[in-house]
Length: 239
Image 1: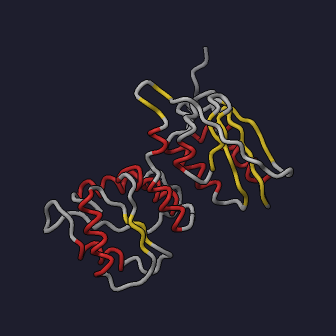
Image 2 (image 1 turned 90 degrees about the vertical axis):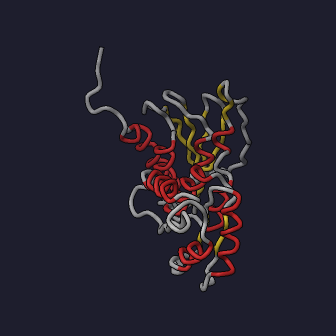
């Protein structure tokens, strides 16, 4: 929800550009009396319209919108779970839409939205910050592969979204590490963590998976990366 309908509409449209397949249900409650402002009644109505979902994340643009959203919780007539995000409006909306579209639980989607600025804060005005690597103690039946990014822009918003939605199809835990910059490992089901890898063209990526269909998942990610996320020119210019 936003003080401006145009802002909310544009933000939603941008987020939906990152979704492959069926998007999650979304409602807009923005503006007041045809102008700028917030309307708690409209927010409550939008929440009620989503009563057949497993839960609702409310994304707000300004602090006063948080107050209107809190009031809306007292005005609604339904009882399904509702969480008000404290994350940034644009980045939080994108993270929430992608997370919900891939079937992540309500709490996980809310966490993604709340932490949506982490990927941006990884990089300062002068470039990337010092790499931080976390040691993960994986089980012995780990499936892994190393791949080189061949698409021109590496792992950016659209390719990270494609990874998140692909990973959701498999019953296993998957982590990606940028071996070139020594960033990661990142949870491959998290848009925010994938973007924090700062993965660019020609970076070497380590894929690690553990679970029931880890082998199939790693193969699928290999194919996606080797195909350049379908972003390669069909007729490359050769010297």
